[in-house]
Amino acid sequence: MSDEIKSGADGSANGNYEVLHAKSPVFFDQYERKSDLQHQTHYCPGCGHGVAHKLIAEAIEELGLQDRTVFVSPVGCSVFAYYYFDVGNVQAAHGRAPAVATGIHRSCPEKIVISYQGDGDLAAIGTAEIIHSANRGEKIAVFFVNNAIYGMTGGQMAPTTLVGQRSTTSPWGRRVGNEGFPLHMAELISTLEAPVYVERVALSDNKNIMKARKAVRKALELQRDGAGFTFVEILSPCPTIWGKDPVEARKWVGEKLTPVFPLNVFRDRKPEPVVGAAPPQRLVSEVLEISAKDASVSVQAGQHAHHFKDFTIKIAGFGGQGVLLLGQLLTEMGMREGLEVSWLPSYGPEMRSGSAHCHVCLSKERIGSPLISHPDVLIALNEISLRKFASQVSPGGLILYNRDNLPTDFAMPQARVICLPASEMADKLGSMKVANIVMLGALLEETECLSPETALRVVETKIKKVDLIEVNRQALAVGRNFVDNQVRVGAVSQPDGFAY
Ligand SMILES: Cc1ncc(C[n+]2csc(CCOP(=O)(O)OP(=O)(O)O)c2C)c(N)n1
Ligand code: SF4
Figure 1: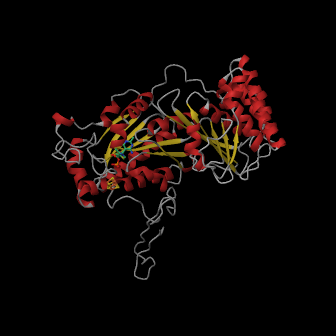
Figure 2 (figure 1 turned 180 degrees about the vertical axis):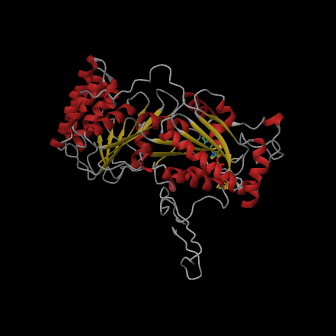
Figure 3 (figure 1 turned 45 degrees about the vertical axis):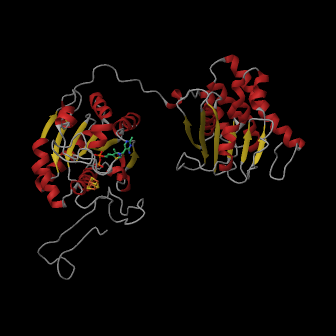
């Protein structure tokens, strides 16, 4: 990708003029996240997304906002905006970009947060999110790329599809009696009180692209000034799905889309002073209930030697066995010991009795994905989980199984197995509920992945009922002792570990 092309036969400026094509530094030099063709975008020729991206990148650059910008990309053809923009990037679930942007801006108010969305994303699945974020006056810039169709999925009807326009889901053309009228999002948003700036522009010709450029810049300027919610609707060509060449498609924006979606500044005003107090901002340590006392323990616990770069644990059982809670305890312990952590729960609609599992990563480095294919440890709280997940455990990994023995017909996996009747042990302590804490004790004793002192502290913070704290302490100790005794005594040792 060359930054500069000089005119003239000899390759240098010919004295009359010099043509410069500069790539905004807000775009990456090379699109390394793409597997091939890393010098070009994934968009079709003539697609409006590329132009909209360029206008946004230029405005970010001109306003000097690159280091402060977080770009929330949608689901749709622009799902991969993070391939291109060298800013903070988050990719939101379909339609949820304004909600994600809200969270980002509220927790990092100094950031310039962009929600970039197509018409299927914003005006169909995400109608609630856009209306409510606009109504709350969130300080985010929304760029709404309206190409009157679902591009990415092959041309289904969008809320903005024109009356009579054919799509794969309206093959005879959109009929008002059946599919209703096109939604005019800019007009809708401008009926709300909070938004400060709402404009519709079109990528139909150079003159209108220059107007779009100004609108994009203005929206970002207002974000820089902390003014409030800004919304720019960009009528945009989708040559591929419309079945037109890029030139025809651009013309179609001007001739067909613009009459239905008139270009206008619908709102441009100073924000009203906010009535009522802003919601209280609480410290993260307060929200997590980490007191000064806990913080001092976490410094001590931070001295625990972690004999791993990363350590992954899968916990599985029935809902109600404390599967998810055990995962949360481990991640909180990891956090307090200064590790990167992630916790990914998975459970059915049932609150109790259905199967549940969660993935926990503890790492000294940033975690790429919270999903674990081959855990170092499986904690199987029931037989179904053992049968389902044992084969996933990394060779040389560990399985903690909540029974005296493995099922007789169970093929030994390539992992060490410790069978401990955690539920029975918990029952003897007076509460079946602490079987998960017995397992935690066994895990800590066997792997030394985290410090038992941190475990105690976290359990004490999490358990609200004072009379339950003692039984949890005992459960932790019982789990640790079980492993300790077995190892010391040598128990029934098997060639591939100790299963008994
Ligand atoms: C929850 C969910 N529902 C549906 C889909 C399928 N889906 C992916 S993109 C898309 C529509 C995208 O259209 P639009 O927002 O107009 O963006 P464009 O591709 O035209 O830029 C749909 C329905 C999905 N990925 N997730
Ligand atoms: S399908 Fe349409 S919106 Fe998607 S990249 Fe191609 S031209 Fe752009």
